[in-house]
Each structure stands twice: as structure tokens, then as C-alpha cells.
Image (cartoon, rainbow, N blue to C red; front, side):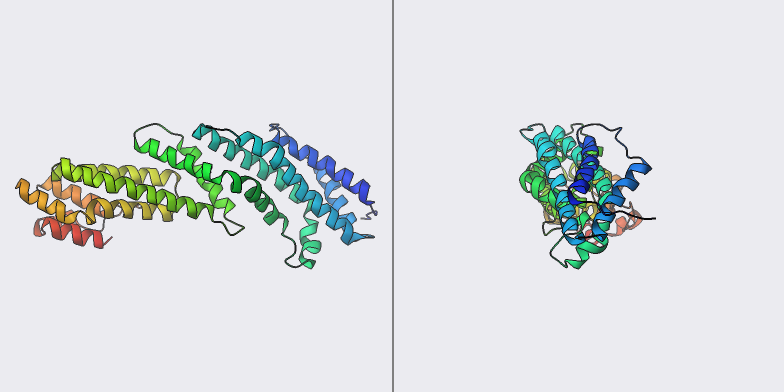
Length: 320
């Protein structure tokens, strides 16, 4: 197949046609699609401009055009949709929607401009980002640097609302967490890790306070019942929208704060109450201390009769 040399201005104008159609997805036109003929036309345009006369200069202009199209889409469509949003759920829905549409647009543009990744960009060494790196970096620089704190606060607020018994959109939180993970691919800022640390710190503060309140107000059996309920809820919550690694860390923190750290006080409370360790109480302790995301049990409830409450809590928690 013969390719003709395409003048710079003519080629850039043709690629603006492709960019304009791809942007329609960002503008709320879900039916936007490219035909095989269109794909071939735009890909061959970039290819021809790159291999013929003045190919390096034309490739540089194409690279800048690709970058400019990403930046303009973010500045004109993504950023305005996120401004002045006080509703946590709506803000996060806009984030998920805009990131999804942006990825769709960028994926099609990548198909048209991908020849730049094969020859032009590698020859520039580390001076230029690959097209995929550039796609993520633009979103990081223009969206996440400005709004990430709001995204994190909104996600943590929804988690707190669910802990208080309110209904939230768990699928939305799952998609938000996935967005954080995807934005971690390039760049020095690790958005999911930062969210994870904030969420675990929030969890620690909550259960530190609850442990003190329950030890003061509840009997030992009632305390263990509450611990089991909390662990069950956190396990369900973690499985719905958190990364598996975070899920295990979350359960370990809750078990540590509610079982391991207050073990002495809990034992003293049981002694003062002068209540024997009943079978139901034993089984509940076993379930609490052995709970993991996989649902496995690390301690057999049948052994409980041979252990004191203190031995059980110490040994079972340490064996997780």
C-alpha cells in the first residue's frame, strides 16, 4: 500500500476532525463510535506524516496536538463538572463518569496516534512521556492535584455514613477506589495508598473511641456481641469496595483495638461480673478472633473450655 506525504497543516486539520468526534463522548454523546474506515484514515494520516519529509517535526506537532486535546477536554468538561459540588455522592459520580468518558476518548485517540509511541517518542528518550503515561499524567495534574482531597473526604464520608447505618452506593465507592488505583499507575503520588492510610486512621479513631465507651457501659458478653457485629460489618464492607490487602489490614486493626488491646480490662470486667464463660460467649469470642476476609478460622471453639478468657484472647489474636 502506498502512502502519500501529508502536509503539516492538512494533517493536523484532519486529526482535529478525529479529536472533535472523540470529544463528543465527553460531551455526553454515548452513541459516538468510529468506523473501521475512519480508524484507518486517521491512523494512516499520523503514519504518513511521521515517515515522510520533515517527519520528526510533524511528529512533534502531532504529539503536542494529542496532549493539547487531553488538556482541553479536562479543562472544558471535566473540571467544570466537579466545581462547587457539595454533595459527596454526586461529586464521586461525576468523577467516575468523567474518568470513564476520558479514558474512552483517550483510548481512541491512542489508536490513531499510536505510531508516535513506536518510533518518535522512544527516540526522544526520557524527554517525552508515552501516550498512555501522558493520558494519566494530564488527569493527575489537572484534576487530582486540585480535587483529590475532596474526593478522599467524600469517599471517607460515605464509609462513615454506612457505619452509622445509612444506605450508600457501594458500587460507586468500588468504582472510586478503582479510579484511585488506576491513577496510581504513573507519577509519584500514590492516591490509593493515601486513601488507604486515611481510611485506616479513621477506622482506628472510631474503634478506639467505641472500645472505651463499650468497656465502660457494657457487660463482657454484650461487649463481645458488639465486637462480632462490627467485625461482620467491616468484613462485608471491605469485600464490597476495598482492595483485598486493605481488607485484611482493616480487620486486623479492628480486632487489635477491640480484642487485643483491651484484653486485660475485658478479663477484669468478666471477673468483677463473676460470670462464667458460657458456651455462647466462647463461640462468639472464637468467631471474633478468627475472622478473616476469607472466612477461615484460626482457633477451634472446642478448645475454649481449656483456656481462660485472657489466654484465649491473647493466643487467638496472636495466631491470626
